[in-house]
Image (cartoon, rainbow, N blue to C red; front, side):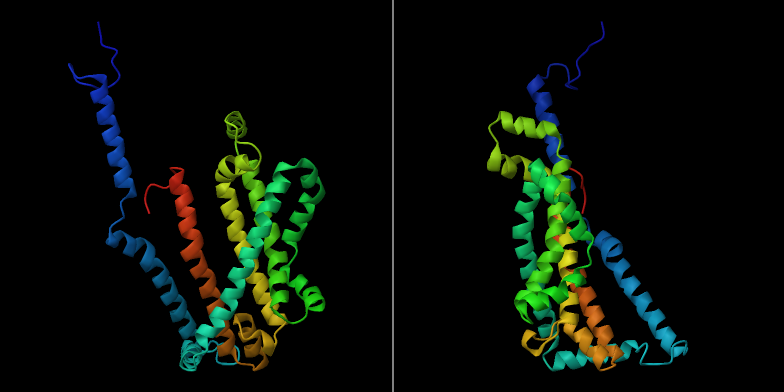
Length: 301
């Protein structure tokens, strides 16, 4: 009669030995999946593509100038002219000041928005009456251009940092709250029932069951919230520039426009783009990889 043994153990070996071998194999696979990829793979798959893309953009940009396709420097400065603006700002000790003025405001405003948007999202997601009352309002506020909040914020609070933070909050809180609501809506009901069975109700259930299960959607809301924070801040700095507020990246962009200096305008645009990419690479991409890896959705990288 054929054997029905499915443990894969050799004759004479115990079931415990077979399970031990299976566990060792799974551990080996886990260690292999968690190991770092070789530098050659990282170089060709992650480093070279953006470097080549930047080189191509610079080559096309310079070709437009050299071939006189665009021969008006007031419309399109050369890469060398923009590089000269960066060099001058660095030598004057102003470059890092531009970046820090905006980044410090943006990150602090985003933390305020996080502290307000997270409990608001939980409340909207878990209380039906609250969702019916302010859920549509949050969706409408998310679609409202953040620049629309700058004039009333200036009138209410004046030209100061409080106005900047108010604009950031009004732009970012709806996105963070809606992201959390979307994540909670996708939590399987079985998780919630299992949590209630084990006594995880109220705040304990929200902390141990709801928030971990809703983390992917919440993280997507955080990324979108940061994008709204950054854009709101740039709009506020462009429109409500004042010597008392210092010179951030938005104010630098406006100063370039007032001075009809396209090289300064391009300097500000490139710095705004650089900060946005850096925040994503340093903060949100690692968080996203951690969430995917913790759920077994990311094997390498």
